[in-house]
Image (cartoon, rainbow, N blue to C red; front, side, top):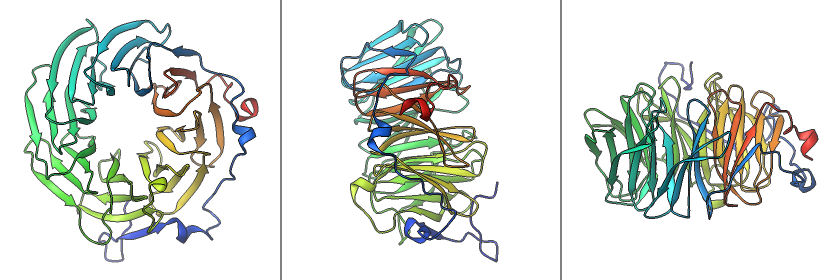
Amino acid sequence: MDQTPMDEEGTIETKDFSETDMQDDPDSGEDDDESPEEEQQQYDNADLIFQQHKGEVFVVDVDKSGKHAVSGGVDDKGYVWEIETGDVLVDHKGQDSVTCACFSADSSFVAMGDISGAIKVWKMDTREEVWEFQTGGDLEWLKWHPVAPVLMAGTTDGEAWLWKIPSGDCKTYQSHGDGCTCGDIFPDGKKAALGYADGSVRIFDLKTQEVLYTINKGKNAHRDGINDVRCSPDGQVVLTASVDGSSKLISLATGKISATYGTRGNQETDFSVEKVSFSNSLPLAATASLNGQLTIWDLKSGQIRHKCQHPEGITSILWNGTTVFSGCLDGISRQWDARSGELLATFVGHSDQIYDLALSSDGRLLLSASADETVRVFDTTSGIGLPSTSS
């Protein structure tokens, strides 16, 4: 897939696709704002409500089978539970708020980590705790390798860690002084892109621990911290999300920024880009901001395909085929058609902000973690979330 704009000589051409440049573009596909009446929560269309947490729930994930979920919250608790019944399989008491929880690629392990940097891993078939570690700094993120039983994490002191599970064999990726706020491992499992609080991005060779590229200088570099970083399915480009209100497309071939997406020149927090994600089936990417805008970008042209406006900030986005799910601070999750920009369904019931979303591998179950102390499970195929029945 040709995702990076090229000049006539075939080299990487740096472009800036700000929204101000697209105002007169008839194909930008901006959608009308939805009225408060249309977004009013009149019923709860969740199939199951998990209510074990006694405080805000920050994170949720679902295993490969779609049968088990893991969640963590401000109550210092992490739970692994059965989606069909809500029965708890693992009851974990952390040292602090549990902010990271995820299943390994084959779902044979589940990891949970809290703000203090305490991380534990359980083997799913036995529910046995098989590994634990205490990082030197507060935990920012936790992610499994796409193939192997290998776990990676980043901390506020800027360190990044890589462990083989359950042996605990460890590698570290050197800090340059600023917090390592996010990270993603390339599909080939050989490299990782890490984002930092100073706005820099570093691409590491996981085996040698060598920094392959550092992106932190020049007029096109980010001016503020990185909230999210994602590697494309083909492993050729990296997309970032920043507090400065922009996203950058970085070419792995050159280690340089080839495109800028977002609101140029605006550094207000309300315009912070929180999440980015690539489609697995289309040459499209999505960016989600605290200004409530979900933007679908055409990676070949760099143009805005659609702008899907939300009444409040967006905290989480997930692709499923040609659709995108979004989690919003208004407590509602939505499903959008990435090709038409149409709102396909709404999933309601939360009484407070949504912090995280998870989707089963078959796309049938949507799980949302909320400040209302619950995780809700929705059947995306039931049809009850259609806009015509939720307004």
